[in-house]
Amino acid sequence: KNQVEQSPQSLIILEGKNCTLQCNYTVSPFSNLRWYKQDTGRGPVSLTIMTFSENTKSNGRYTATLDADTKQSSLHITASQLSDSASYICRYNQGGKLIFGQGTELSVKP
Amino acid sequence: GAVVSQHPSWVICKSGTSVKIECRSLDFQATTMFWYRQFPKQSLMLMATSNEGSKATYEQGVEKDKFLINHASLTLSTLTVTSAHPEDSSFYICSASDRADYEQYFGPGTRLTVT
Image (cartoon, rainbow over all chains, first blue to last red):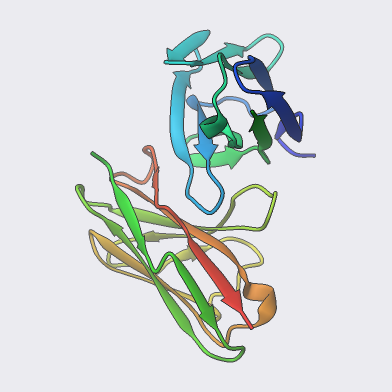
């Protein structure tokens, strides 16, 4: 069983709309959680980083949340833009070992 | 800061040949570098971890004789895919860290196509 499960696998939204991506985990304990944006054919770029004790972290139009009770993290994107089309990956750091989700493929349409 | 580059960004090679991919940390000294492989629509899979000046540690199932890793300096690691086969075609991504247990910074990746 994967330790990190992301949903949905893929998502299509219209430009300007908001969306929320989910990341469920069983990794425990962990030191921090990152959300990455990975454009096609490129390496992952960090969007947010949260420690185990943080509940929310924002970076512009990106807001990540963490609920340790339900073992869920989410990434909320507001006012989506065409350039937001990419794969979004959540990743847990467990003592230096990185555990990645499989990613959510987001497509923003005009 | 924390910029990692990879070269080449894409490469096409014939089956049976070897290809070398470079990973450089541009503005920090990377004591540890990591090599990942990513197939389409799949998660990054760690292949190996290398510390400067020592042998790489390979993940289970990764052939060390096929994927040669050299981390000769604090800013450069290389991955050589030897006797490449079409099934080695993938996206290879490196990351670098200035401590073995600290955050990793990713390179832009190298697309390898073996014909």
